Structures are given as structure tokens and as C-alpha cells.
Length: 148
Image 1: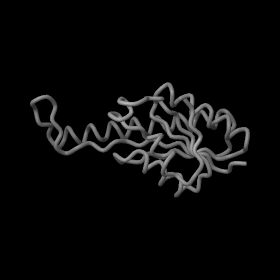
Image 2: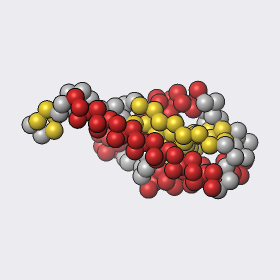
Image 3: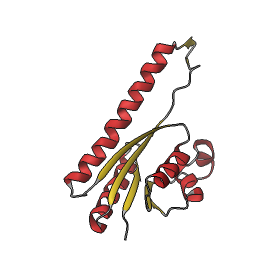
């Protein structure tokens, strides 16, 4: 049924449930599993209260974000391998456009399903915070499985 399943994770409990479902689906269908996390890029003119962060602090924060993202996707692939997924891949994309990065990665990795969680925010909260899941749903040409 599916050959390559991409699962997007941000480390939250809700996304952990999406990871578990994607792993189960990959085991059931014999699919490969691609785990992705989008590490946000640090701004170069960041203010911490009234203090301007210097270049070294910004680069350090970016490196820590990248390492945390890599550990997250590596843990997903380790869990998938332990549950019997035959081939796994861990990808960290550095971007502030989460939805677009997920879609582009699914396309470049030739995935035939994207699995994501949805926080289920409504009305004003969704307007303020945005919805990466909604963006992927409305812009992806690859099927998307959303778990709430």
C-alpha cells in the first residue's frame, strides 16, 4: 500500500502519538519511514529583553536547536527500527517555513504519505499561531494522514 511514509515530529506528546501511528503503519505495510523535524533558524538581530545577543550567542543557540532536532529524529528512527521497520531515515531541515519544508522533503524523498499531528486549535488561536498541519493539508499533492 505505502512504500515510504514521512512522519513530521516536533517532540510534543501529540506528535509522539503521530510517530507511533506512523511506525505501526510502516510495520503493517512494510514501508520505509522517514522522520523529519524542522529546526527554526535563529534571527541575526535577536533581542533578549533589552540586550542585543551577539553573533556567538546566536550561533550557539542555532547549534543547540540543530542538535536537539537531530536527537529527536534519531530517536524516532531508533524506535522504528526496534519495532521492525526495515529502513528508516532521519532528516533535519533548517527553515522557518515548516509546512513548505515538510512538503518539499516528502516530495524529494519520494514519500507517498505524510503523517502529522494536529493540535486542534480553533478560531482566534489558529489565526494567531497558524497551523502548519493545515498548510500541509492544503498545499500537498501527497496524501496526508492527520491525527488529533
